[in-house]
Length: 102
Image (cartoon, rainbow, N blue to C red; front, side, top):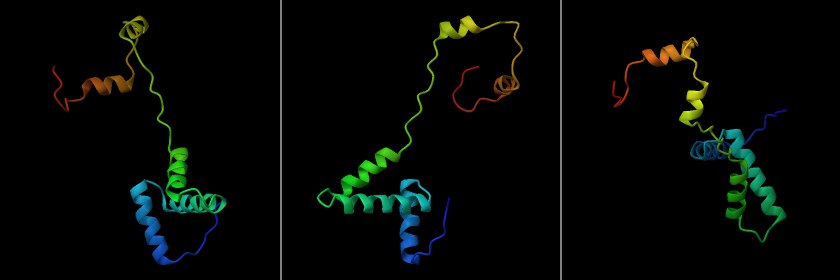
């Protein structure tokens, strides 16, 4: 559920700039600031910068682990009679874009 809230234009601009720097939406930035404020009020002896860092690290997307392939495994799956997918054919027909050797 989302609700519209009116805020001061100066605060909106600050949130817009911070959101751009932190790669968040403006709404996400304002929500982040609210969470920092809530935790800071509940823990007055804890430095605000530590609170912000902790909340940022929790909210960051964890890097997805990419599958690892071994040549032996790929070759074991290869079947010369298999038809290539459209994506494979497009990839094979592409022109070089870097320092590929043909």
